[in-house]
Length: 408
Ligand SMILES: Cc1ncc(COP(=O)(O)O)c(C=O)c1O
Image (cartoon, rainbow, N blue to C red):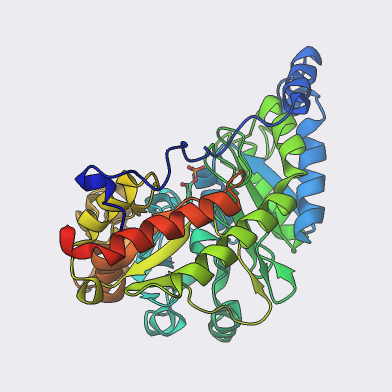
C-alpha cells in the first residue's frame, strides 16, 4: 500500500487543483474594453451593459426584473428594503451562512433572529423557522447554502400562513432549480452575490430579482439614492458600474454549462464517497426536482467512525494534493456583531420590545449548526475546469487516508 504523503510517500496528485474563477476567453476582455471605450462607465449616465445584463438575468431567472448593486451584501439589504423591512422588525436567518446575510438585516435597522439548520442539507430547518415566528417577524431569509436549494415548499407554506416576506439569499445558487423554478423567484425577492469567488464572478457586485414589479421598482429606487433628489425619499447609492456589467453579461452565458459540469463532478464524487466510511455527502439524497449548483461540495465528517480529528484528516488529504478543507463558517449566534448587541439597531427604541427578556444569541441557541460546524462541515471546490480526473483524485486521496487512518 502506498505510504501517506504526510509520512513521506508519493501524493495522489501533484498537479495544482484548478482555480476558480479563471479568465476564459478574450471575449471577456473585449467586452470590458468596449464598455471603457464607450465613455459611459455609469448606468446613470448612458452605457448599455448594465441594462442589458439586468434584462438577460431577469429572463434567465424567470423574474419580471433585476436590479444590479455593488455587492451581494447590498443586494440582501436592498431586497429586505424592497419587501418593507425596517426598524421594529425581526428577520429569521439561518445560523449557517456568511455573516452578511444577517448583517444586512442590521443595516436595514431590523433584528436578525437565528434559526437552526437541518443537518442533512445544512439549510434552514422549517421547524426551527416556524418555532421562532412572533408578531414582529417581517421576513425570513432562506439561504441556498452551498448551492443546495432550501425546502422551499415548507418555507413558503409557513411564511404564507403567517404573512411573512421571503427573501432568498442565492449567493451560492445562480441557476439552481427548485421544482421547475429558478431559485430567487420562489419568494418575494431573491438576492445574488456576483463577487469574485461566486458562480457568476465579476469582482464585486450583486443582483436583486423579483416576480413582483412593485418589489423591483422599490429595489431600483432604493439603490438610486431612494429615488432621486425630487422625491424626498432616502437611500444610498449602491449602483454597480458599467465595466462590471459588461463582464457579467459575457460570463452569464456560460453559467448553465458550468453548472452542468459542477453537477457531473458532484455526481461522480458522491458516488465514490458513498463507498467510504465516515464521510457523508450533504445532502446524501436530493428530493425530486431539485437541481443544485454545488458551489461547495460538502461532506459531513463522522469522527466516531473515522477515529481521528477532522483537522488531522484534512491535513492528510491536503498532503495528497487535494484541497479539502474545513468550511470557514462560524455559528453566527456567537459572533460579536450580534452577540454583543452594540451595533446601532440594537439601540433603537423600535427594537427594544424585540430584545427584552429574550436570548437571541450566544452558545446553544442553534445546537445543530454549532455541532455541524465544529465536527462535520468539510468543503471541496469542484468548479470547472475540475472534471473526472480531479474527482478521481479527490476520492482516491480520501480513500487512501481512510485506509491508513491508524498512521495519523
Ligand atoms: C451566502 C452569502 N450571502 C451573502 C454574501 C455576500 O456577498 P458579497 O461578498 O458580494 O457582499 C456571500 C458572500 O460570500 C455569501 O456567501
